[in-house]
Length: 87
Image 1 (tube, rainbow, N blue to C red):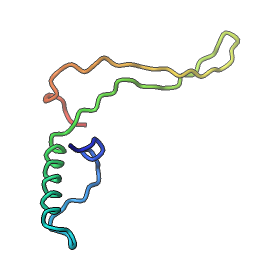
Image 2 (cartoon, rainbow, N blue to C red; image 1 turned 60 degrees about the horizontal axis):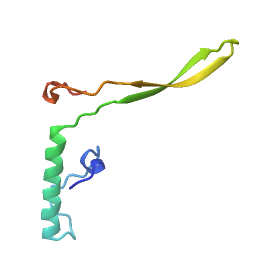
Image 3 (cartoon, helix red, strand yellow; image 1 turned 60 degrees about the vertical axis):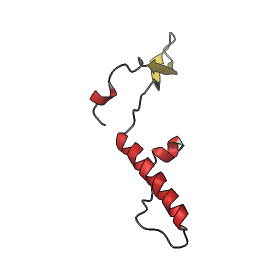
Image 4 (cartoon, one colour; image 1 turned 45 degrees about the vertical axis):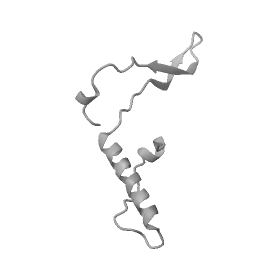
């Protein structure tokens, strides 16, 4: 099974012919993994933002500017993924 970073890597070398020095068995294995990666890549993936962290400025009771770290949470995704539009 491939790892997340391998599945969703932006840059990946595509094998079109067997490189010199690579055995035929290694080449077949590399092609099989490449085919699996391409199929998963074509399916796409869902990115869900659960929490947004941001800084907010405000004045306290004495009139001094303060910064506070705020968190905004989002409701869980419920629905049909096939109806979503790509970004």
